[in-house]
Image (tube, rainbow, N blue to C red; front, side):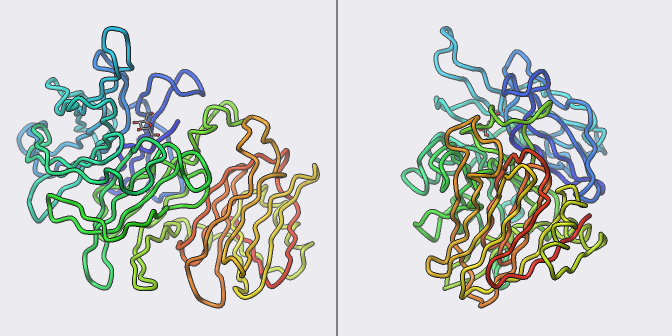
Length: 449
Ligand code: FRU
């Protein structure tokens, strides 16, 4: 699997559709898989939601709850869930370049089964090779649907009153931001900072990320219902790790902005040494804006539901490295480490196992950088760029650093300063971590679920 798709909260259930190739663990003709959760912690997988057809593969897209049946896709008196996705046909001799168009499907049984719209596609490519990943939301001020769609090196915005007829509003991003690869998976969200509405545009870029390969950048700015204007020219990354890509947010969660990303990187996604599965999501994160040094920064703390799950588990406040190691071994490598560290001196945390694999997290006050080192953390020979030490800036200025490391087998998410710095990275130790060592001024506690 790859990208999260169709994230929607509906009747108390979080839906997570995802790019899925059911016949192999490498990318192929894309379908939409489907999973649901009531608490963002426990997930259940369901039958395939959408399969390729004569218009092409089912690429990424979104789902909205069409509460007033503006689309007319539901019988009178009912309201459908509507999926807006890309139909993608690979390039062939007859077609020339790939053909990507936006299409609809709808569900009247809370996402369990889907029907494709007869009039597909509803939005044809304006002659662009890359034209995909429609993300739709209801824009209350102008009382219409707004779609963001990725167009190679920029994002286009379209509007519709019925999800079927779309007209172009504007374009954003040509020659802006990180342009080291193709732009994909846009998401335009409204967040509040100091009581004022601000808009954030997420854009994933296939290569040229801060650690090489793919990554997700964001722009903070304003959206007037027609045009998005960024308020900064610098490139901002949602996550500084190598493995958080194509992330988007749930629709229909008033007052909250919940995000999930695909925990991988197109550099080596097809080579990751897992079986029979390949591809996983990050933990759900809450998107928030925080002001610092006169600028609005995006923070990605882990969703409160995950935090409460850890709080109801056993908390192990330990003083000695031996006790910590014991607790880590008992957790089978699935736990959260909470670090409280000094921002004025260097410190490090090291995980190890019986095979001699080592994963290391360090902080250096001189450069104000965190480092996540997976050069010796286990299997890495499947791709030359996998073994690396990834550096990430610390943005916060407080004298104490609060940091969480979420571990689950090969998945690791490091979140510092309430999500101001996040470093999501995979590593493949030969066996679970059983040793923890600390250097310098850092306290560590361990929680299990
Ligand atoms: C992003 C992406 C999307 C596309 C999908 C295909 O990872 O390349 O642009 O819709 O994956 O699986």
